[in-house]
Length: 319
Image (cartoon, rainbow, N blue to C red; front, side, top):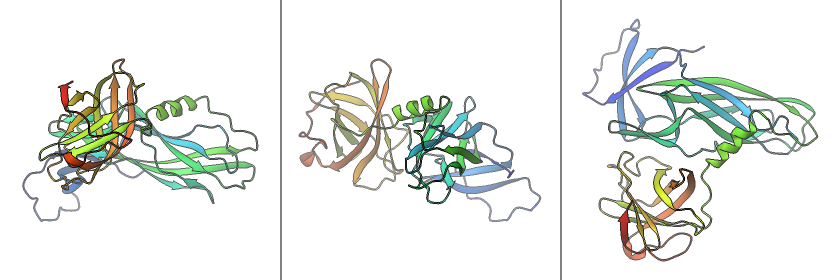
């Protein structure tokens, strides 16, 4: 087993010495960038990663030729530890999968359930705690002999509490090939159903717009009429260097729409071309809902709401 690396993140201080460490030093200091816009000095120490258990699982017990199916990387985190979303925020690294598949099999991208925000001092990151299932669609070839196939993947992640440890696992999954319809796995089908409920939905019936101000960006949205009353909302951008992750996101309501106030990242490209990401809505009953956001940023005179509608009315009050 390769050594794991413990990473203790601290704000960047003075430049490190240019001297090379001696070979027998057990601890070395080096500068790395965990996410664009945040340089960190990290202390590396040999030690195993034991705070996350990784497993490759299947939604189906068997597979059929030419019929796509779903597998997933299941990560179970120890209490107090977390892993990261596709955009980790101010610090962290997204989980990665490197596949080794049978001939003519194809793996799609990771489908990311919506994350939560973790804050430690001025640093806010996006990720998962307790456990998460990251689904991936596998497409087998149209012709497939009966028997078994083995799917293999190398999973890489960063697990963090106060310190961070890169984790890695070589995983495999053996699935029988059958001509009959593939039955769902009693052990894992419910977990896949839960993961799908946490995937951002396409914004059918929603309307989105965005406006950039000197110090703020407004994400304006109108939910479908059938939507239960909103309690709170948070926007998670797809890309770094868009918003200040640690800044509050006040939610206000107008006569015909809601407005979420965002703060641009200090080194964001201005003007911002668009807002792309996930809007997580909290309902009065405590249930969350996530929806995809693709909103062009326009000035006040040209603000239209994607999905239909004119610019929203003035703000009425904050939540």
